[in-house]
Length: 377
Ligand SMILES: *Cc1c(COP(=O)(O)O)cnc(C)c1O
Image (cartoon, rainbow, N blue to C red):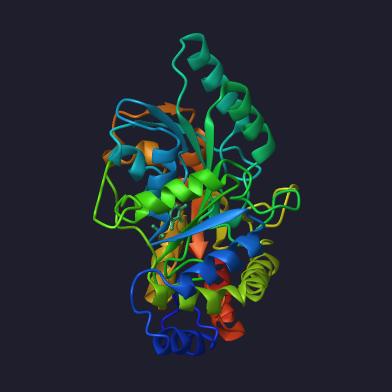
């Protein structure tokens, strides 16, 4: 039986032509015309002013934090319900993450909890340097109140839109609403370069400085001159060619993921004890992953038992991200709230959601869950 993966890479068929163009041009080096074209086309696709192609989304977060002036001992607020890469770069800089819980509408950072935290810190004269706001599973966070708070307190807003390429918040792209936004082209994301990322910003100076830091902080003189510490974080010209090909099918990819979610929800949400991630009223959800919540008592099985039963049939499902405030790697970090994220982790299960998932594959997933509901436990 063919294994069904959670979110495998999906080729568009255009990659070979773009790669051939890159190869024929002789640009096998990092940087080159494909990188510049990818940055330009990506910026246009999301409505960003400036974009910088990087080797990963994590690198983009790292550089954003440096640009925000984050250093040893500084605090950085991060959504707790996310992948660890949202917060690891805080530790690279010797800074301290403060984790903020989710609200129930979008599962993203709760603006009321952030307000409470910033108010308390302002009174003590110890404001965080930045907020890393995650748009989880492709659902935009409620950006306006969070952006207003960041402006009020003078805190840099960095959006982690790694999972949210193609989603909207009040008609705009998440990732383009703060001082910096990051995207990921890892193999499991909405579009992929096999590995890669993008940093976008409305401020040209930020992107110029990030570009310099990402190319070993080389000074613009003929010899190798370095006045500060640099990184080797640029995307290769070949991978940018793959990204350009992938970007052309972005809208189809999002439509396909949304259609898969709609099918799951239509076929399964009548079952007692099953519910699906809501779509917040402020924008379009990419449904990067289709996530359902399982009430163990009502359904008869918990999410882990369902995951194992699916696995036995060659279907890959995964728990919701384990909240970062529960991760040993972040032990000791301050946490604001946490119960909502813990509840979503306890009840959540991510179903196969790749845009290449065929209707037959979707039927297999649906039938497997239906049969679990029907079987006596
Ligand atoms: C994938 C992901 C990242 C990291 O992106 P990479 O390109 O894999 O480094 C960061 N944040 C979130 C929320 C992600 O899902």
